[in-house]
Figure 1 (cartoon, rainbow, N blue to C red):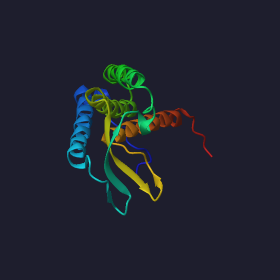
Figure 2 (spheres, rainbow, N blue to C red):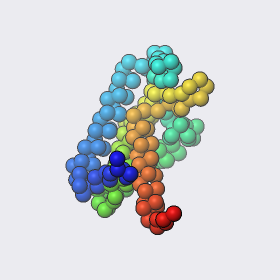
Figure 3 (tube, rainbow, N blue to C red):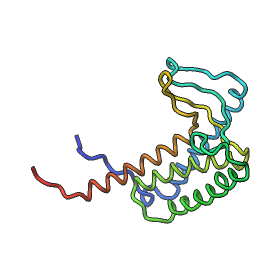
Length: 176
């Protein structure tokens, strides 16, 4: 059994088409699930599955992650969550396609950008982001989230893993 995780392909290996497929696939999946949430969950009570581990219910988020900033004035929310977020996402998208990044960074950024763009599209089109998933045990629960948020968190985790791998690979090994 190998003691190292095999490297993921880089943008150069899978190509820009591969990165574009990850981004468009993530956005498509998120928006398909949001469509189902809007058409079948809006106005309905939340549903609980797996012994209340998973709750599915419709929510609209005017703020950012975990509704942070939802109480800001509408103009401020538009500047922060639509204009500024759009600029940052476009800059990150250019970075993914242009820079020579390692495999963890390129895939992590691709997922992060895909989730961000999917929520950003909602915010531009609707003024809010549709959320519908909640996980937890008893009173310990997550905030309400969506598929795009999962992509953002997975991308952030991959970026962190990539950085940890770089640090551990750069550390000299000592024989003990």
